[in-house]
Image 1 (cartoon, rainbow, N blue to C red):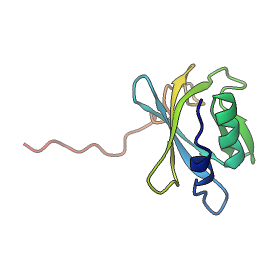
Image 2: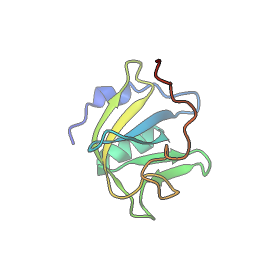
Image 3: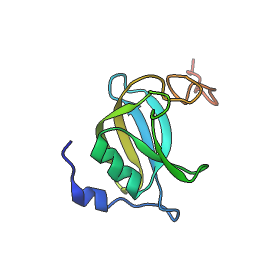
Image 4: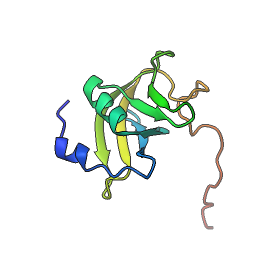
Length: 117
């Protein structure tokens, strides 16, 4: 995977050294999950072509699918205009959510705009 080293170095991490990473299916376009990356997890993801995140609860690196087999093959990584959020498009190998749902956003809907009559 070609990597723009300048872009990698320009990521704006928060005060905890983290950047939010939105993971989206490259096949369906569906948002699968939101996770956090630090500089090391981003570099590892780029190196091995699969998502690696930083677990805020466990305070350790987390290779998505290392135990479940539900890996995410990276198709592309884009930073937003402020370089403080990443969009990672993946080919998923199984469900993204730890509950075995396709997406972590399968749980509940808070608001749906009603069409005006």
